[in-house]
Length: 142
Image 1 (tube, rainbow, N blue to C red):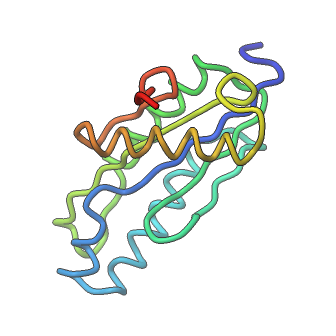
Image 2: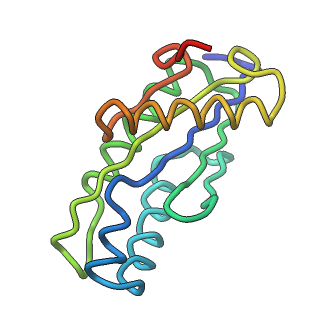
């Protein structure tokens, strides 16, 4: 099995979400957030966890994983959000920036795991959005 004892954390932050609330109103924004949560739940395995952290940021916690599985899951998240039903308003152009990290490879505590994934999602935002970065991909100089 890929990664046996590793735990993976994905942070997913919607790109362009502020425009949904500004242009279409908060009810439309709420609908997009609900659809995003449902979409993310379709990407994960039974036993994985999806949570909204706040605003337009979501987390996925996955057990018994490894780098290959995290790459696959990140790609699935990117594709699913791109293809997700928009409902009303249909003209919303949303993508997602994803950052991911693994315990114990990239972090020794849960706080470090969240911080590592957060650095990666910020890196994805800074380098063009609509992409996924791992701790290996995004290692800013200290």
